[in-house]
Image (cartoon, rainbow, N blue to C red; front, side):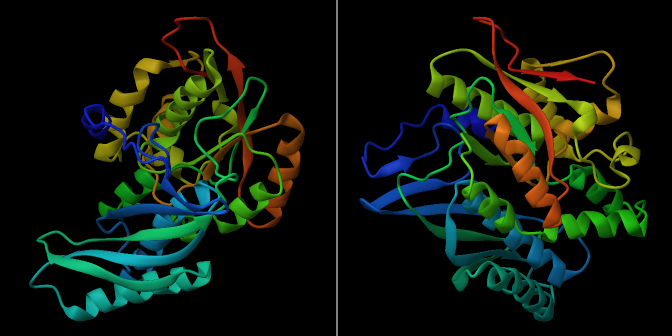
Amino acid sequence: MLDQALRGLVRSADPNLLVGFENADDAAVYQLTPELALVQTADFFTPIVDDPFAFGQIAAANALSDIYAMGGRPITALSLVGFPADAPPELLAAILAGGQNKLDEAGCALAGGHSVRDPELKFGFAVTGLIHPQRIWRNGGALPGDVLVLTKALGTGVIGTAVKQQKALPEHARAAAESMLQLNRAAAEALGSLHPHAVTDVTGFGLLGHALELARASQCAAGQPLQIHLSAAALPLLPGAADYAGNFQPRGLQDNRAFAAPSVAFAAEVTEARRTLMFDPQTSGGLLAALPPAESPVLVAQLRSAGFPAAQIGEVASAPADSPICIRVTA
């Protein structure tokens, strides 16, 4: 829906707007001086865990991820709150405290916010970061021969749906929550010592949705047809994710399938559970980076030592002209 709506908008002519909405990048970038630019993003959603403190933490980690995906350093955040009139104020206090806890971990100051009455609880942040204008990571820029590294495991959407229906095992719910609480700060810092050509974070559009955006943006930047090849067997999955994929699909998963599926070709051997999890909308998911092959083992080893289940999951290749397929998935 948003993809279609944005097609009718004209990009701002302001030359200082270095990154806008045109390629579905994770955040906007606005240049202030030759050596300084602002990175800005906003994200909020309904509760995905029962613990209000943890919900606040996850909402903060999710919003901060967009700044890290651009290569920026978050500095300030404004809370965005939709709160029911009949809900106790202690609930909101716990959510805000959780958000501030994760912002503090990121070195990002909570500077204020805005709230409205809403029958459905919603919470998130608008985050501002800093970046050098010549060191911006975009989702377009992947080159043929690059490899793709994913820093976190998939499955938060299906596991979260199972949690809401009280069908998830405690250990699976706990593993999903721990993944969502993990900041992408260390992953971004590891990438910062290397030479990534394209970076995005895997969130609401799922792995295939964000990979498709990366492929399209990179194709535009390169001026040649590109195709992403992914290995389903190489994907890191959260414990229990494959078990919940059949019967606990969030609504957004079907939207992601409708958006990305026409541009994806699956090998017949790819299981339905793996296909489903590649469309699964993620909350506070990992970074997806395209980088030179020699740097992939270095990145994966460094991230695994830092507690990330990082894995090399595919590569970028040249594609036949006029091919409607942007992503091929092998077993």
